[in-house]
Amino acid sequence: MADDRTVMIVGPVTWDLFPDGRRSAGGTVLFAARTASAFGVRAYVLTMAAAGSDLSALDGHAVHVVETAHTLTFAHTFAHDVRTLRVVCEPNRTLTPADAPAAWPAPTVLLIAPLLAQDIDAAGFAALPVEECGVIAQGFLRRPDVHGAVSTTHAATEPLRQAVGPRTTVFVSADEIAHWPPPELDSLARSARRLVITHGDRGAEIRDRRGTRFIRPAPATAVDTTGAGDVFATAFILALDQGEDTAARLASAYAAAKVEVVGAAPLPDRSTIERRLANG
Image 1 (cartoon, rainbow, N blue to C red):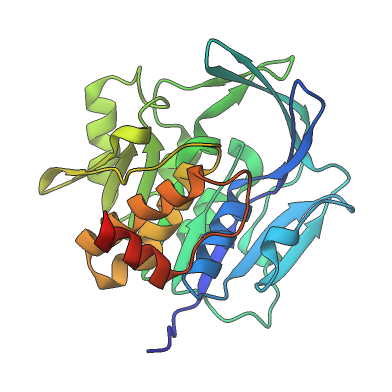
Image 2 (cartoon, rainbow, N blue to C red):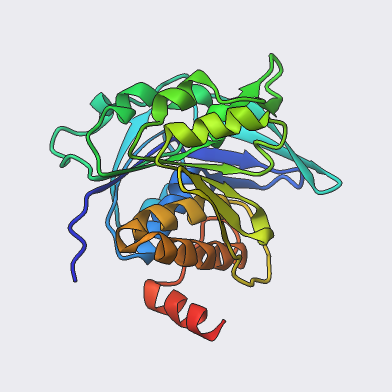
């Protein structure tokens, strides 16, 4: 059956700099686009980047790039398996609904994917009358200091709260909310349709007005965990029309497939993932 939904993905792309000198294209929109491709969905991707950025992961989708002087750039350092981020360059631009081409159809499914709080006009996109909205919250919770070093807030920020509504599924990682007071997390869950907390290779949990439900992880041999949460969130949102249980199973399976490849590489198609689940 043809998928007649209109899926829009919004957020910046990045250059990620590593201690060994590598420069890799990144950003939630790249991982989300790869996931949409695996689902057979041609998405509408609204992003921002400087000329010369690697957008090859967006091939096959309708893409509108707001050109900026700089591509958002993060320097990554690692110590004792802990990653530290530093902002090197910022686009100094905020994506708004008005940036989408007038010829694009109105979205029915929206994925908001900021990497810093100012990347996206949260209130503007939240006002769009979509059926499902996924908010990958990490960018709304990042706070760079004057030197660019990134820390995570200990509570929901105003941009995150502006992005949340009754049609919204919010995705956070357990690390991002590790120091939140329990009432703060409960408040966010009540404001949204559901709150999904990912726990890496320990699975995930869904919190809503009905309580808390746990999602089992799919087995995987991890090579690169970068983007696994983004893939999980995108697969979950794209599969929600088939029910929450199916969405949870597919999200776990796609996240497992992601950690077995490096970077924003292509992901297995839906039939391959279904076979993997059946044999797991």
